Length: 323
Image (cartoon, rainbow, N blue to C red; front, top):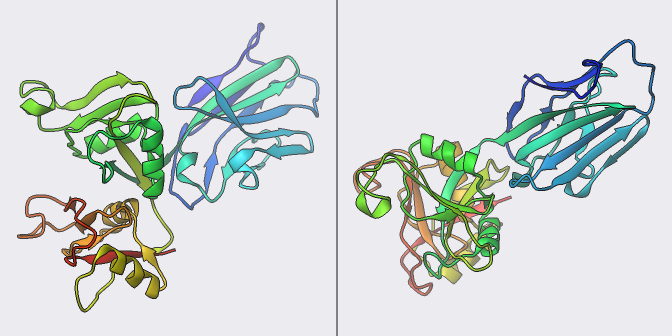
């Protein structure tokens, strides 16, 4: 339980988050707990101010989310219309966020100001999801940080945080190419140490290149995606398709060609398993395997990657997504 108060003569006002970590999923709702403990000796104050902000990954600034004082309430930016106080009692400052997005992941601060007294509590909002490494058709190590942000966004994902990458590593993720994380650092997860990946005699862990120049340095990126509300599927066709034919086939079926993040979410969160290589929106060819078997990822459950073939090759099927 996080507890904080600032007074000279003892804790006349305190703010606490009974559960400092909240788990939800994209498209769902979350309640970030924040309760006010107010000394009875304090005079009544109708102008007690409750303010919620979101902390950025580098902690250098805060993003306004919601402010309430008496009957005046205001939400900000992309949170507008999606946040309100739970208000189960006059001392309940818990924040409800609806229709969660990938960008809502992170740490939030609840601050209460009551005259000369104030207190804060910090709550972490985590999302159920999956981390995946990504590089574009140009090849490896071609993304500066801002290109990396765009690349993840185009694949229905966001740049992963260190905590998300760490959780993926704890789950067995092993990847030998360095990628951007949301704090501007470049890292990669190794579970089986070997010479090209930091050395054979080093221990398993997250290899860290540190903070890099977001404009000048180029690496791959680790993306994070979460649940979706649509339908991901392999579109059965009488023959194999070129890339353009694949795009049009999904459109004729009332769908769009699927994105890489949608395949990873279907694979990891829904157990989607299909041993047919298919085109995806970025021009790559992949297929998801949850039950390893001969000729279909025999050693591990994984999203298998067939590269970025010539788009005119009539060799593959297609994965579609209906939103």
